[in-house]
Length: 83
Picture: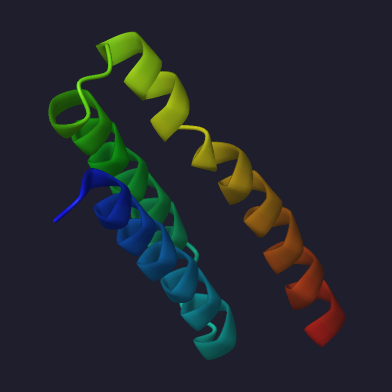
């Protein structure tokens, strides 16, 4: 399995899980775990399978943290609108 394909699958599963947690109104802590585990697995793939340096792999992999903050803001707006 190609490293790029594996990265795409992990990203898609994480996004689907984020959507699922919003729809099912689960605890927000699951979103934090999902984003962290996704970023960690992307870091490991980029570092070991793709051969990037650890610093460069870290910067590329933990960029979804920005997506996490956007999702957190959207979720809080959704909850406020729902109430």
